[in-house]
Image (cartoon, rainbow, N blue to C red; front, side, top):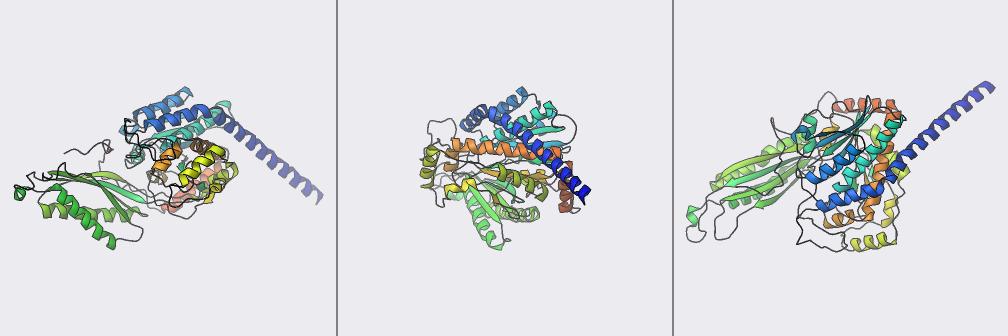
Length: 482
């Protein structure tokens, strides 16, 4: 018995020594992130001010790429045929750990870092970072720089690659990056997203198709000669009415929503051109594929009834996230261990004022908590889904907005310009770096994650929602053209 006790003691001592060494090396990662935090926040604030829309993020993309180049990364610009997409790679050999970054803004959300709604009428843009992508790209880049320094020091072996991903909000850039083979050598991929809560876990999302129905009619005087006109706006309205009726006959979990992007300029002119922009979503991409075909029939009916010509501008589709429990467990553990978020008096006062504008505020104390979202389906959609079907992928959220703040709101834009967002961004960078460290130092985790991906695929390989030959919709955020 005595020799066995000694051997157990030695084994335990070795285990604790390894753990201590790992924690010390992770602290070096955090020191790098902290030493660069002021400059990182300046970059995030600059991207927040620019608020560039999808596929037009020229300055934001350049800013991130130049910073990573200065840190020793090898940059590849305009990947997948997208002007604002890039990769930044450091190190060599396996494993290759990919980290996603985003930087596009949303229309109609121009806002100051103020607790009151304050649209900037004299601003150059109507866009705002209502989903926190100005934080997303910067935090991911900072984590990559911290990992790169440890690779340079010899404490980690392998390759880290940052993916500069534009146009997540409807542009589906990552799908084209997947099709270009940019992830084929990755062992795993990590991502995160700003939120009003801290959460991680084995979670999926909604698949989504996006389409613009454009109708071409015939102009005429709406009072003097209405019989000579063929209203493109009528075609849009009939399409929308048909879609309303369609909703009753769709599977549970379906979401169909739209916005009219062009409908005429004057009531006394029969509109010769009109456009309606649709999203259709469901937890399963196969269902989205079928529902999309039915939605197209609604538009065809609108054109038939109004004697107008229908032009279908398919913007592309994204599949649901394929969860990975192995990776999610690692990320959840790191988020719980690293979450030390605390707000000062000014931040609490700002948060309280924002909460007065919210319909469903959440206690501010929730920033100290971490929610396990394993087994759930998020009601949003993301092109991260397409990445997750070709390489094991996991993500998480950190509290960068006031608790209870809905995404895509002016309150989210406002929070994103404050130190509340800065603290959430810093936490995210730490969690990504810590999770990447665990993967570099424990190849069995990567092997288990890859085995889980194969099991979840079950012999059914990734199938895109894009149509054959689909090109990136580089002009999808530009005004409708006749």
